[in-house]
Image (cartoon, rainbow, N blue to C red; front, side):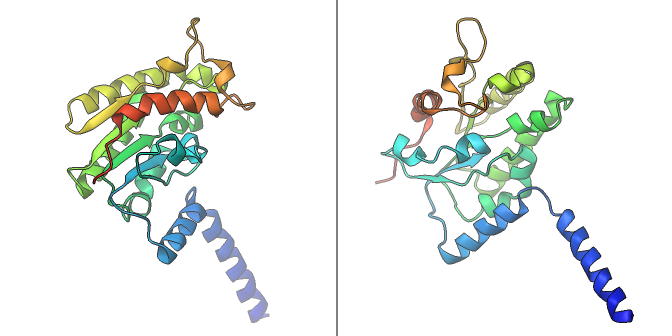
Length: 221
């Protein structure tokens, strides 16, 4: 009887611990495991953020004369980037960090004030500069996805505040993809998105490639 009760207790405890794991815990554990086998390269341009970067599987091909490390994980928020900073950014010691994140913060909590998301970005920026005050930081603006058109005013407001913040900092850049992804009617261009009306197709990434390229540092010789 005692053994049965103990077994049940262990099962319940295990379930509770599993249920309490933060978002993307398993993804980050897999990243840590890969790093233990083959440490990530250092001194490169590091892409971090959410699924728009995760799905950019040929990002190195898009910038053939740069050395790119892509450690974005899909669906993540700025809170997730902060939570896993030591695992995602820490081992890489990059020369430059390019960030695409923030869109999911609003999508996951539509009543979230713009100021909260901007403060999250500022926290992440402080962590980056706390690790290396010389590293260059580029932020890619939140994009106007057709499936999230109702959030566009918040995306635009947050973009503007983040741009103003970065403008006061050295060795930073702000890439405006928001305006480049709108049609003449001021609405998202449907032809540059996939069937889910959220993620981009090749035409959408071509816009990003042209917008981001001028902001990337050159390889060291």
